[in-house]
Image (cartoon, rainbow, N blue to C red; front, side):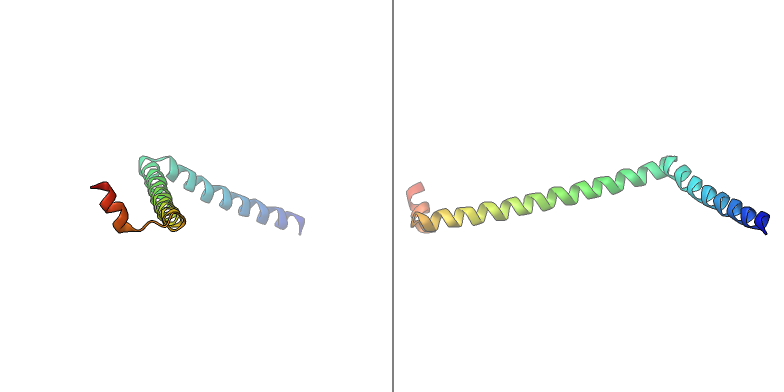
Length: 82
């Protein structure tokens, strides 16, 4: 009975090592590296776009707050610029 348990454990560990080994080998190939770089680039682009959007919204919100505090409207700013 004990030998059967250890045999089963050995088979399970072997299958696990083979599957994980194939995943690691796939990541080490040029195609795997290309996929990783593409995924990271996409993630970076998304975060940069999100940051820019948040920054623009915050800037607009702060500008509106300042205009309200200083009792300024759009027309007054355009006329003073001329």
